[in-house]
Image (cartoon, rainbow, N blue to C red):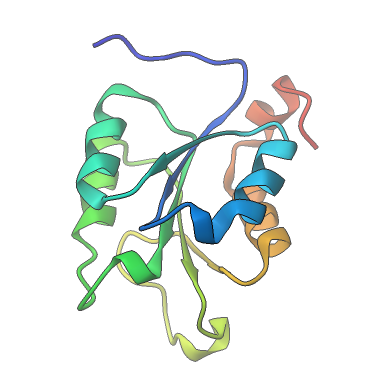
Amino acid sequence: MPLRSTNFPRLLFVAKSSLNFGPTLAEIKATGIDVTVALTTDSAVALSLGTHFAAVVLDASLIRNNDWTVARSLKLIRPSVPIVLIDSRNKGRRQSLPPDIDALASSDNSHDLVLTVKQLLPEKLLADRGIS
C-alpha cells in the first residue's frame, strides 16, 4: 500500500468516540493539521503501517488496566513519532509518563492539547506548511 501524502502534517487521533472530542478536533484542524481518527487501538496500529503520521494523540480512557502496548506498537512502527496521552484527570496526579508516551495533555482543554502537539512536531515541518 503506498504511503498517502498530504500538504499538511498528519495527526492520528485515537479515541473510543470522536463525538466527545468534536471541539478539540475542530481546533486542531483549524491550525492546518490533517487529522485521522482511529476508534480502536488495533485500527491505530493498522493505519500507522500505511501512513506516516507526524504525531499520535492517544485517549487514556481507551486504554484499560495500564495496557500501553498500543504506544509500544506505534513506536516499533515509527520510533520517532511523538505520542501525546490525553487524560481527563488532573495532569499533576501522574508521577511520571507511561512507557513510550512523550507528553501529557488534558482532554478538558483543547488549547492545551493543540499547543502540546505543535511543540512536539518538528519546527521545520510546521514552517514548511505555514503553521505557526
